[in-house]
Length: 82
Image (cartoon, rainbow, N blue to C red; front, side, top):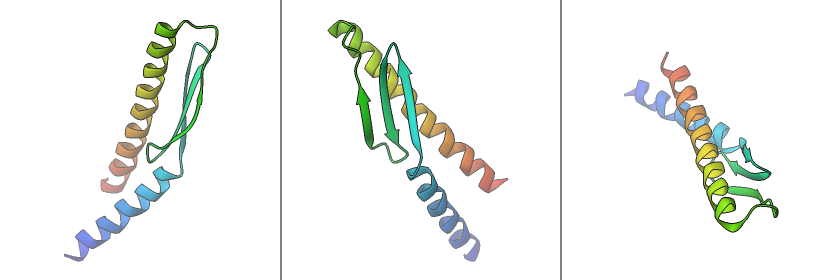
């Protein structure tokens, strides 16, 4: 039981650490910055792109940033259990 409490505390520590992270993804002059808790911190659009391209690139940036956060989280959890 105490081992589970220890793991829970460690997971909370990891969660707090990841929450403080800032992840950036940039493509074709479009930039997205997310916090580790998936909060949008900044979006910078490229006015030179047409609407369709801008939407595509923005979606790619969000997906990349979310993927980076997920990878960091999994990496931290693996560190904890190894």
